[in-house]
Length: 326
Ligand SMILES: [Zn+2]
Image (tube, rainbow, N blue to C red; front, side, top):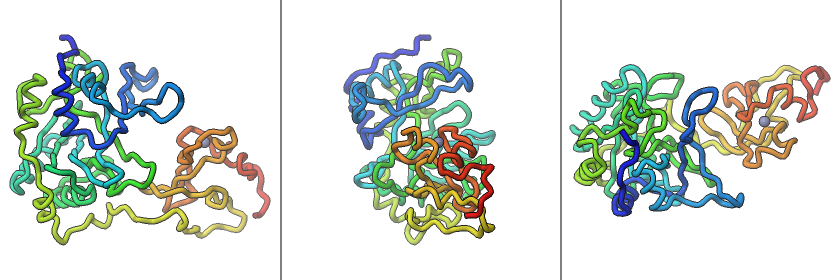
């Protein structure tokens, strides 16, 4: 079976109206990573090193046609709103959980579309007009709570993941992208039919688009009614802490404290994020987010670019062998 399908500009327009809420996007690599064998997503770069071009209708059309595969972001940073939310589940009982959630949503008067994935699926909810990301998240946390469906995070490795993953974006943030539906998944290969479809319609682009068109869209008013008086459960709440507030932990005299040497830019999940001193010494990490310092145990830190502890310590002038008191 060929992985390419005819896709029209009209399809791309309709698809964009449903799914595209900001111009930033990601592209899935058509070639597997030599070591992990996985097909990673990356943000496209511009050829001249400037700002990358935004998602165009033509790229969306190519996604539907199967020439390339894009990932999309939920939140528009200018409004903190999303057009859709997606619940991603890919563990052993993922499909059971998603169907449970889908049924509960239906009882709440909300129709959600279930899309296959490699292991489990994605459950999609569409809004008539974009709603506050925070409101959409509050709702799903409470549905999951009612059903005893676990939400990933808070120390659990299995559980559903909610896109948007953030209540709101800070300037310059993108949030987390999710594989855009109806395209080719390069990891799925020919043996699996190349694409993961929505269960609700026949497996052609026309039928799938018609299904999404018919699907009732949720009104903001309805969502507001469902979450009246509710907030995100304590254990999942993203604390609105600002960079200047890291608290020093109890340290032994002379103990190395990474927070004395870096400027924390923001908190992401359970980490402080800062420019890695070792990367910085080589002129890298200009965006200043390679170093993660655990909020609860600031003794733990690591560089996403792979700098070792030794390299980071050397870069701040406190090499590990150096036992001098502070
Ligand atoms: Zn580094």
